[in-house]
Length: 127
Image 1: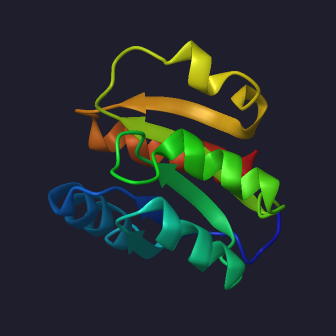
Image 2 (image 1 turned 90 degrees about the horizontal axis):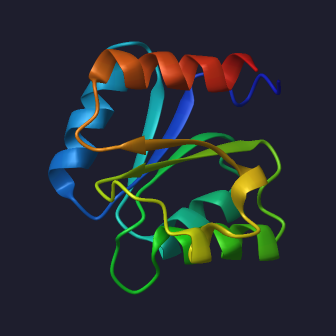
């Protein structure tokens, strides 16, 4: 693993409460946390050189999580990032996920257990 990825996390979600709660959870564990509220801003941060774990919401206006992941791949911005889905949508959209499965580390549904989320991210960074 690239040491620049260590303990860096980007949360992509249009819900400010989710951004704040996950930011607090990870900052309390010593993570460097970046929060963005759209797929477009996620792409911008990756273009600026972000490396680390991305927790991606699916249901966002304008550019949903699937479209954002497809754009990340199209632009070749998937190097040194680990993407996990973080969504309130309990069922997977098999049509949208087709072809993207190998780029998605995990599919986490809201509401999530904070301890479990921390463990999942630690596992992502240690693999």
